[in-house]
Each structure stands twice: as structure tokens, then as C-alpha cells.
Amino acid sequence: MANTATATIRDFSDELTTTSWNVADGTTSTGILDIYLGAIYTDSIVLGIPFRSSVLIQNPTGIAGTADPSAQRELKWAVSYRDVSEFLDPGTDSVPNPGYLKNFTFELGTANPALLAQGTDRLAVGSDEFNTIATANTFAISPYGGDIEVTQVRLVGRAI
Image (cartoon, rainbow, N blue to C red; front, side, top):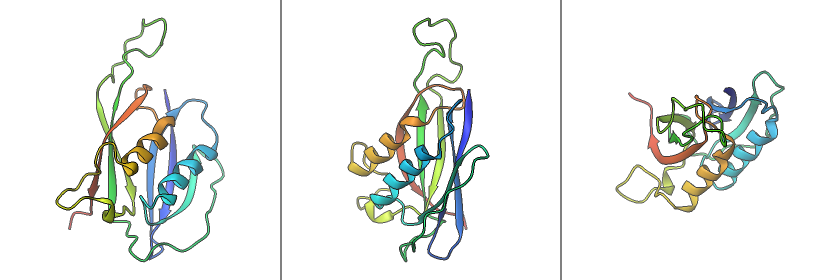
């Protein structure tokens, strides 16, 4: 089944946004999350500063620095993914996965809207930014424990 990993990103106004992912049981290293946050931050997919990350109740890590002036926690990437594991016991294939092909979503704060093509609110599938998010999520699993495939990354904002 799944454990929960969390990451917090600081925006330009020093406000925090927290994101949670499902990770496999036994995942205990914050290094995985630091790599994830480093990839999306380095490629300017998020404009805020990765602030803390943890798996369960581990010691959080802080990353110093100042956020991009346009980093707003209200602008988020809604990352949609689906469970692509038909069975929960690969090789034996005797335990069907009840989450197979179900869709799920999580959000990343401080999205960079400049990455979007004009007239769309989604990153193009296959674009460098989409691939960075999809590749960085290789450690994530569905709530049911199956492997995932990122299907869409969409810009969303706070409802006013």
C-alpha cells in the first residue's frame, strides 16, 4: 500500500503551499522528494522555493533562497495521473488491483504560467516540462499501490 510524502513550497510573499503524494511502503528517504523538488524548481516549472519535504514524520529539510517575484501559491499545476498496474502482485497476477485505470490528481503550488502555449491551460504532452514532471513522479504510486502514468498537467488557480 501507500505511505504519504509531503513537500512544502514557499512563494514570493513567504506563504507556504503543501503537496502530498503517495509513495510505496518502505520509502523513507527525503532524498527522493529533494530530487523531485530540485527537478521541478531547476526547470522553472514552479517559481517558489522548495522549503520542506518529508516522508511520514521524518525531519524536514530547508532550502534557502528567495522566490521568483511572480511566484504565487494560488497558481498551481494540477497533475493528473492514472493507476496502470492491473495486478498488485506482478508476476503472479493473482491479486487484481481495484484502482486499475482510475484517475487521481495532486497539485503543485507556484506554477509558472509562462510555460503554457497561448490559448491553453495545459502543458503539452511530450513537452520538456511535462516530461520533467512525469519523470520526477516515477517514485509515486496510486492510493491503491499501483504504478502511475502522468496523463495531464493543467494550470489551475484559487477560486475567488
